[in-house]
Length: 407
Ligand SMILES: *Cc1c(COP(=O)(O)O)cnc(C)c1O
Image (cartoon, rainbow, N blue to C red; front, side, top):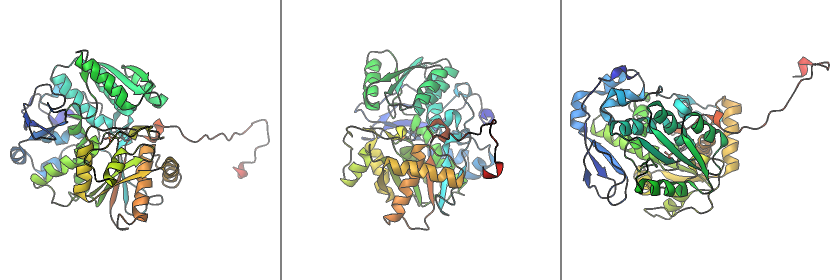
């Protein structure tokens, strides 16, 4: 899969840029946030990229994440610690979603979630830039992906997770070689501990958007979507939004592809999907604010989107507003109902966050935020197999007469 890459190659990265002020930063040195405390974005010489590779050349390559290498920041083959980052399929949901819904099923990626996209890139860059020890707060899946990729290349990791993180996530993180601790607080409080350790020089801070390369990995969702749909983006994208890396990344990907002439100016309406029990971006969207206040008392079954405060809030809100999209909150019963529906009627086991996108899609149709014939892509960000399911306790007793016809 990495056979596509030469052992060492120039990248097309020109510089990094503060997402708030536009201030420029050197490429190929270790960065956290900008001086002002904002996320950094990676910028490329897109003219040179366009000369080096065409849309058709990309299409002819193997369909893994590394087919997009000219738009990615890694220099050296040996720094890519791959676990098999496949292109994820688009699956129809004819009965529970209707004829115009496609699910991008990210649960098929290594470690069972789309966090693999971001972390495979961030770890490769950390390795390239000589990082030996990383700490990160997580609601589960990001920690698992970091643990896997970091252990694979001998980088030490410390993972802090909120008390209510699903047990399976805690165990998979430990099983993949990280030191993981539960913390009696929310993810931003775990993040504060990680930040303190980083300031004390104990480790490198891998919190969402506090290093520049996770966005680059996550943006491959947008690149992939364009290629899979014949370079014509869907009318709407429903994205379960925590830190918003994927939404910000896809928006960046669309811009890069348009500048390359690979797609036209048409953009999907971007729908931020949050849980009613933790909806800071939805509230800020409704109030017309540029930043979102912290959500107090966050609680939802959809752990992946239980993020009370996102550092990239303004980037998420900008993308949603520019796209003509919307921010929607869905309650836990409708999330679980949507998960049931997709499983029972279409045979696709969604994670709760994926269920949230289906619930939000239904809400958007009902509220008239979306034309009924609009083509929508919903993100199922993790495999449903990682999450608690309804009990199934029916038994047959071999000591009894068993009426097979009644089964
Ligand atoms: C992390 C995560 C999200 C949120 O993704 P962001 O890009 O951080 O907003 C949604 N669903 C699942 C399952 C996740 O693990």
